[in-house]
Image (cartoon, rainbow, N blue to C red; front, side):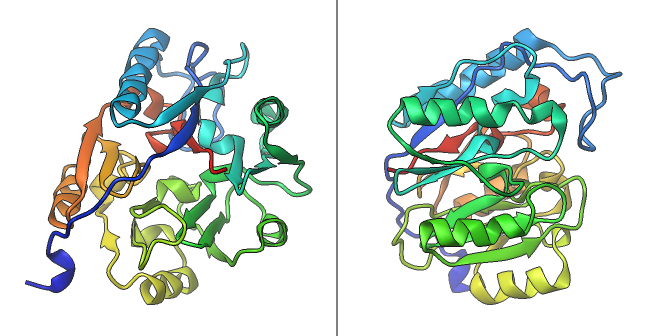
Length: 281
């Protein structure tokens, strides 16, 4: 058996996150392949599923903050898109589509009110949807939402290496739908990821293969239920309950996968990570 498949002892670390209750969730427009305004949505079911995710985080000892939802912004539940927070600096979001653009100022207001140093973006970006901290490096997605010039802005702001990855499959339009960070804390030795190879162009794949030779490669079926749109603390990984092979792979590597059902929020194109914005002070 290859060494990479041997379970190792992993230690969880505390996470601090921001979430938004989906009180106004519905699908009334189409800005990604998952959305179909002709399909009925159940807001009360979305709230119940979200509350399960919220309680899962609380039970894991996460510090969970809440931003008030705003009527008329049904996608505000996808808090990860609201910005990128590192070193107590909150880089605000500037959304591609007009339907979501008011979310950017709303999240920046929350950051200010809660003591973060807010940086208003000069370039189009959708926050942690496309920016993932892996160890001391930031992986940054482009191709559908965040503009590549936001990556340079990010690098200058945080003084960290930013690696650009181009997404090529419209169903995986944010980086956090195609990559899961398994070892999230800065300074972690040899941090690892899981990813969907078909979501990236050849140049991006070469980068991922070289930098993360022991990465978990997730199959198309698990990716199709946004199995990679997951969030963890270095040991516990909260994932889509239907991503069963990903669950198996995580267990083999010594992680503790915890499945939750966010099927209603999937109708808007979001999953576990989409609902979760990490606050790093």
